[in-house]
Image (tube, rainbow, N blue to C red; front, side):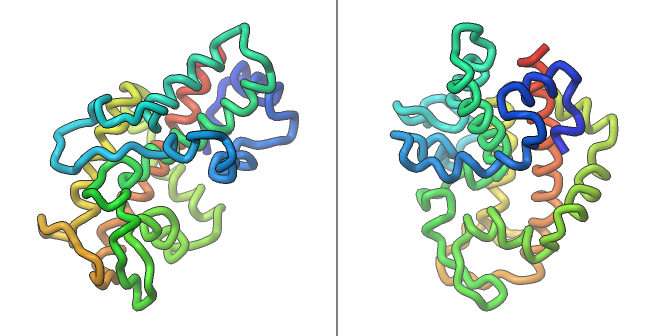
Length: 231
């Protein structure tokens, strides 16, 4: 979705770094496999209490968090002195982290490690709230990537693209924080769920449209960010 919206200049720069024929989708999950890079596991999230009204840098760990690292990686890609190898790695991280930023539980927290410590029964199967948002609702809807692309493209109307193609990384984090305030609660309530909660159709019907919109935003914003960097 993002690659289809790159300018010719941005697409050429991406191909120069990744290699012709390598798509953004091909490297989108690369960052999740780089646990040996010191401190990188903390770059995928920031734990902002859902009681906060917006993202604040004070919640960013000293080694960096998802918000600060996105900004760092944008600077590296703009730096003419950075090596090609450094920029290759940076681009892969940047793509991934922008998408991670749109997963609400990568930002909002209830002192549960982004929902990882909230054990739930998702359609009768043991899981945790973070995994439900990361993949399980997505997979339950459909694992057909083409269907997802059609649906997300359908949400990306010109008016919405214009709206999503602005703001700061901190603004985007605040959006996810606001969604997380609802994601931790059963639909229609303000009570934060606890371990042992059973989730089924009602929760999926609430969460799926949010996930679709967040993924559509992420696709548009990956493209917008790369187009701004590689002018």
